[in-house]
Image 1 (cartoon, rainbow, N blue to C red):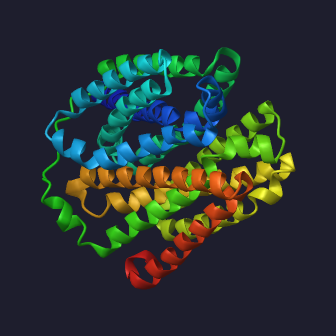
Image 2: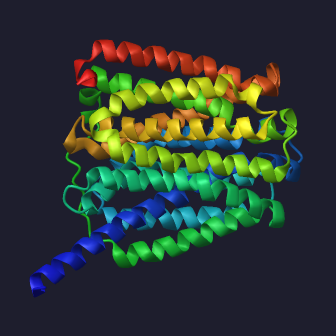
Length: 396
């Protein structure tokens, strides 16, 4: 092997490591977003409030990310990307320290606000960073790695967070996330290259982007899908425990399966996503709809519920990556802005879904959350049918 080819091999290996580090960063960021779902009952008990009141943790976090993603992305648009990423993680780690010592529910909410701010900027820049550090011709791989990090947050992060919370208390869960984030921060500082901002737009770019009817419909679909998903998923832990009388360990197992299914979705996308993304999107919405409307039927059998969780989790991840890939291709010079709005709208959907789920729990019944989520999924399916008819590019 010549000296040049050895250098090239080392360079490509380094690029793969950098992509994997972005996947790990996504894992940490998403673990902290999803983990309260698995700890709702414990946090509610600690502060002597109801699970529906504790659900405001999810809604507040998600709506802050939704509201602040675009403004914060524009404020930081000229920052060098590595320094910005490191700054985000400093805020993330400090906010987790406050979560650990939160002496009231309001203080816990304040700590979540800090984490939400870091989250808002992170998801505006992370897909673009992963694509930039990836080896030549490996963009789909880079997006799949970030998506796998996201799904691993549900596969490992949420169940592990739940187990640690059961054994040592929910505060320890947040402490562990902070410690892992510190390790990731040190690795980012050492391994990532300097990445000057490639952002060429300004706030005036937003109306121009939103004149694209396909992009507007994609964003509307993303919002509807996540509203549907989080209407049911936000209260899945008390649903399993109270409606299905499922033990704590089996509830953890189902959450583990749900997250693990995300890896299946990521692998399916990396295999067929470039050629069949529209078909994958349509099929995923159908599967999510069926999973939600059969949730009450399957909760009394751990085997049926496990199959349901596997299908639902796979469909959700496939849908997210397929839509992300389509959104990123709308304008190659405004990917940060496109992803910022994408992240904001996902979180608007998460917050709205958690709110709808809380309303269903309070005013209908805990057992109704699957049906309410299913109705919203049906709206998403009708929108997808409209989009396939309206936009020839989706049929290509």
